[in-house]
Image 1 (tube, helix red, strand yellow):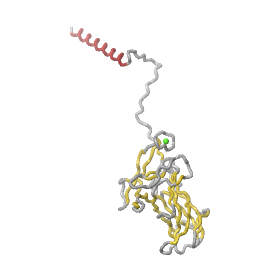
Image 2 (cartoon, protein in one colour; image 1 turned 180 degrees about the horizontal axis):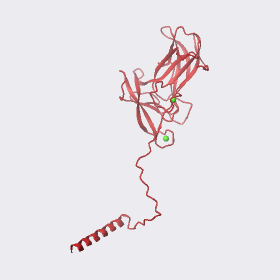
Image 3 (cartoon, rainbow, N blue to C red; image 1 turned 90 degrees about the vertical axis):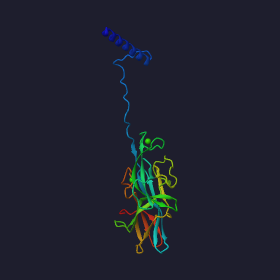
Image 4 (cartoon, rainbow, N blue to C red; image 1 turned 120 degrees about the horizontal axis):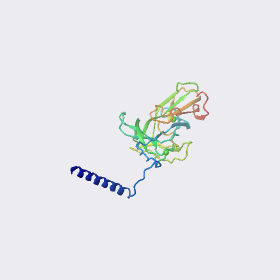
Length: 272
Ligand SMILES: [Ca+2]
Ligand SMILES: [Ca+2]
């Protein structure tokens, strides 16, 4: 008797399961067969976006002049220009992730990823993917903004001589889009000016121009400097604090003819 009841319960349960299956697929039994396409397996791990790194390059110095200082000395003044000719924007964000001197604060580099995989930076789709500790920023109260330290190095040397006549190896810059660089002209100006407590940057295809009158755009000349032609070299990110796609194209050089009263831009000698 008990065996009969167990068999009946099993038959009833099987019947309920079949009805449930029919209800789920609308009452039409699925016809599994060898011609059915294999179900697509869900993508569990999306491909990581390729980095869109900036590429810094110092463009040749412009607007050279000789200026007499208050103490009677002479200094060479010029416009320094840093360009981003890479695939991604150069962006630094103030934070406290690293140690800096009193009066300074740390900033990290923001790296963007090519989320839509087309190889170029698209502001709507290609977002921030990670940050790297970069360096320190200096407060410029008079300017009401911060400068990223050691963005450039300026060196004056005689042709064929490695030892510099004079050098400034830590020129700070407030990063911004001042003027289009001579590359891809399609990217809009995004970092128009430097403000406090916000990110700074140089967009793809833009350059940051520091006019000669700004602090840091000068090299004091020795009193006994001989008149003649010299090499003025400018180099972006000389301490390699920022990650970029090419670390070997950061410098440029111009020739400068220096007399006791003036400085003129000339073609750079071959041994500069
Ligand atoms: Ca570079
Ligand atoms: Ca893209």
